[in-house]
Length: 133
Picture 1: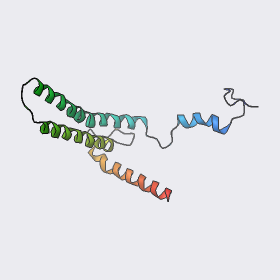
Picture 2: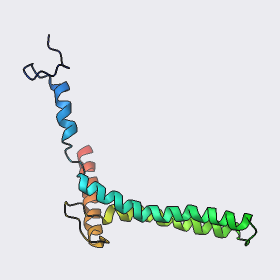
Picture 3: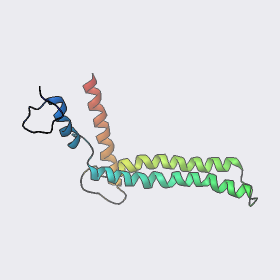
């Protein structure tokens, strides 16, 4: 009987156990590391800054009102923080779609990458839709 957990290469390979290492080391159809890092940087900046600002508005408003420095209507706090949270949501999409999905980095803002990346996403959804039918 062959032990599937034995590391000796002279033993007979069992297809389900020994091929797991190959699948984990070479993801097929995955996002390359350089592209994923580029996307993460853009998303962190374009969504992180507005989201942190939106949370900062709550804190600043609380401090200003609780210390009696000024009286800020709650609706102003709510609308201004909601606007920054919405900008963070837009920044999430912008960060993903403006980053170059190729191995080359692209430009600083990445505006030229938005249209081709949206086209790639649409084509991917259409391809998945046709394979399910």
